[in-house]
Image (cartoon, rainbow, N blue to C red; front, side, top):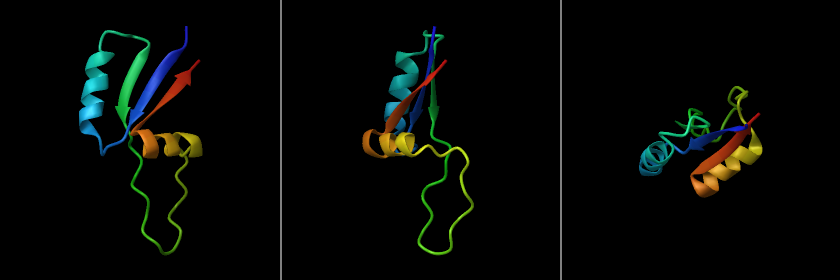
Amino acid sequence: MPRYLYVVSRRDPALFEFLKARFADDENVEVILDRRADPAPPGPAPPVERRVRAEVAEEIRVRSYAVITLL
């Protein structure tokens, strides 16, 4: 059975708390806050963030969360 990882924007703590409570009893779902740093200001390029997945980053930006299926 697949597992699901909800990554929630740090800017939406209420959504994080809601999803944590909603899936508290579901062993196939984990809810975490996005641990990546906010985008750097203009200037020299920052070090490459190895965990960045463009589609996930866009979902978090637009919807405040992303769901990743873990097989």
